[in-house]
Image 1 (spheres, rainbow, N blue to C red):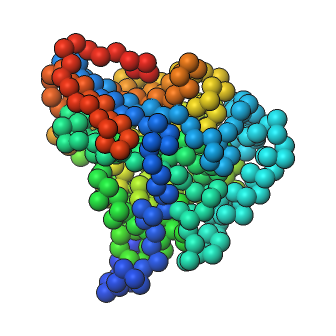
Image 2 (image 1 turned 90 degrees about the vertical axis):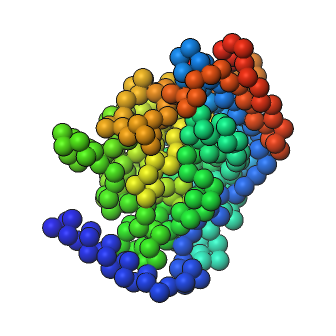
Length: 381
């Protein structure tokens, strides 16, 4: 019965959207991310291939911009080992913590209602409940080796509804920027797409929040989501991650990004001052690899400065090797006390088996050379 109801709403939404122009659709997309210059965080992307193992390693590294609001967390995160409802950012600065809650809530972090001022306002125009994004496009030879089109770093002063703490995120995108600009949905100006029954313009249905996700077709794994790590599941409509999130069910779809799959068992026992690994999808395709973390990790205040996803090497459910043969087998993050840099690293099968090294710097300052031997660097898994 539930499936029939979902199908009815989906069909009704498509029907309602027929004939509508983009101007008639109150959708949000790529504009919800505030684009800043990667040079401001000294962002760097390194790609290395070892021909002996035919494995690539790609890393994104940066130094925090402490002038952004609330991104200067300078003490351990209280409650990191407990319930997400008990997390206390800025534990030694109660006035700052109060201001953080007040400003983030005032800008609509719970997303129970439209973002204040919508439709003339959205999260990309705000200062606190927003995401400051740093984007770097990668050259074609790197994409051929890794499958990655571009990478982004995100700084989130208020976090998200399901991440109520200041945070950073690193995205390794398979989807192009052009494709991301088509990922629009009705979100009432927020970061979370409304459920499929509210998506009246068609594009919003491609986030598959109604459960129309890729599944295995090998005859042995019915209803198992395909091409995501074993143990992961897509966060779709009516998913209850935790009763702590304002008592709400939630989906994970975000304009300009897609929706995510996580290991829910690991999430339930997560140490919140350490990074989390997720997959991103859209329109039944894999869109990105996502690593996100509490901002204090990037300043050395976490319980460890070195993290790797625990189920490594990562295996994928009925992996389509032709389309997704370059998905990473290892995912990790490190913070260097010496340099003050945070490094996010993925490693997987390379599209070309020859020694290769490439460094991408802001404003297209880059070097590209063939390495005579494997290049080792700080932050490598």
